[in-house]
Image (cartoon, rainbow, N blue to C red; front, side, top):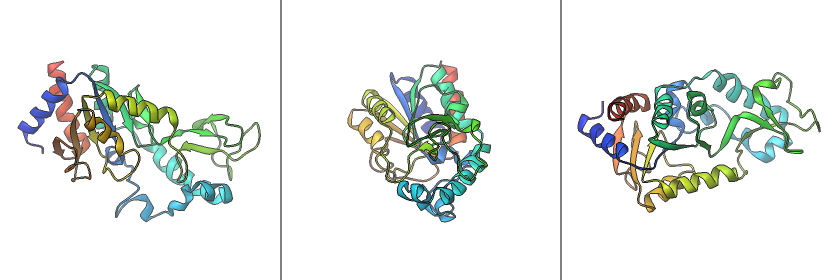
Length: 250
């Protein structure tokens, strides 16, 4: 449990901000049953990350799609938003959080009701044809086929998230930079700061004068470099404490 005076400090900072944003990583979705990719119990300890290498995907689409379907659609597809996702959506409804920048591709912020979500690494909600650029809603595509094919050009469809060797989506990147430059407060939740270039977003906010509040179960690369207030704990528990007190001030 985070000390009450620390929670109160965070509440005051958030309540008095004029342009607060959130930056979320894998840690916010752990309590929804989605493991992080890295670390002892991460997905890459069980699966070969090469399945998400862009060149390998085109060379071995059958092998890649078998693992992609298992991880991102059978497993991730059953996940539901948790209290931390719902708290951020509520803070947006209250006019406190202006945008959520997320490293996650699990769609849980959108499912929880957040509207201004910048998906830095894309999302698993959509599939795209790399050949003709036609887009498909993943839920409307038969993923039980050996590989899903485009109904226009018959190319192999690809999830609309970033593979190794692929660039960050330009629109999400540009919106994230603009939000970071405007922010006077950024709430980091569940990010270790290890993944670049997404981890530069909180640093850009800091360089433009933003206060940094970090919520993580353990210290991260942000903690001793840019964080002003560190709330150590589970995302759901800390966010429930914050939203409870912020709603009383709203």
